Length: 286
Image (cartoon, rainbow, N blue to C red):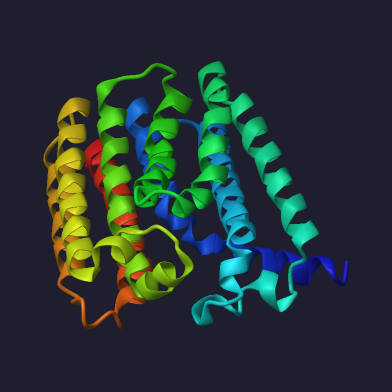
């Protein structure tokens, strides 16, 4: 027991459990929109459990897959797998437990969600390796998180429809856009290691332009999702505010000044996810 708690805390730091705020609000948005209100405690808790589990799996596999690169990257040398706080075997066991929890949570929701769970697991575990062979790796990560609103919707209403697909596309471009921004700080390192990323391949100015293009798509798809779902003024007003936050995000730094990436990546994108969900709640209840 004396070793369990420190290991658990180190695992939480390894997967950055606090960054679940990126996916959870969109999963809740999908569930609330599908139910046109409160989806019920059972769906709410199982969706929460599934999202935290699959995200933790993805981050654990990412840390294991990137271990050889993290050892030589000055920015990542203090990660728990490198400091010895978490052993490789413990990380593998944790990843397997997360996969099991995810499948069980999906099974508790409905048959359609369960049938899609293997695809979600493959994408979550496999995206970390895409940086080795394609510059589309940012969009693969976006696809992983796009399952959040789609999965939340299907957990409540197990049938595909236009609104959650459009919301999922908005999340896909949102994540791809901010992942491109985040990759800018490692452009030189990625290039030296033969890794694929848009900043490493195209340079920072082009990468920043593509990130902006992604976030324009995000704003458009969020608005189209609201129209398809039959939302009202509150939703569109809040999504307009999300668009302004994205615009502010891109004005924070330039190719020769990446000092604000931490603020952009962690703070503002967490705010965007929460604000988007609040827009859904405002539309349903106000």
